[in-house]
Image 1 (cartoon, rainbow, N blue to C red):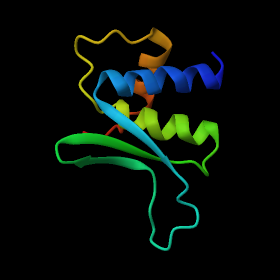
Image 2 (cartoon, helix red, strand yellow; image 1 turned 120 degrees about the horizontal axis):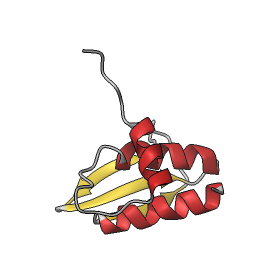
Image 3 (cartoon, rainbow, N blue to C red; image 1 turned 90 degrees about the horizontal axis):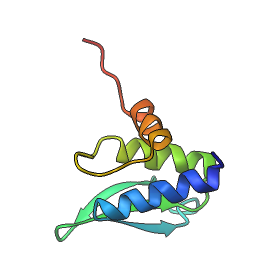
Image 4 (spheres, rainbow, N blue to C red; image 1 turned 180 degrees about the vertical axis):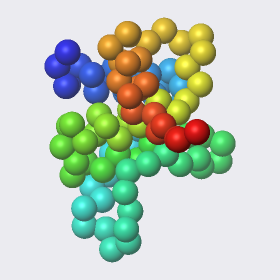
Length: 92
């Protein structure tokens, strides 16, 4: 699957989960800001650093969405597999 299509699927999934994606150039920020999920007044936002390349954006968003409850939401098998691989695996 093409990276652009993968990213579009991830954006669509975020929307289904009620997460709005905001795009900000964080490369020149004076603080150590980076992409990530935040909650403001009960709404979820994912701040995506526009200075990242597409592969990094896919990894960042997949890492976030892979930790969400996807019960009852259809996810294309290739994207579900990506989300599974992106989840942190803790040793037992």
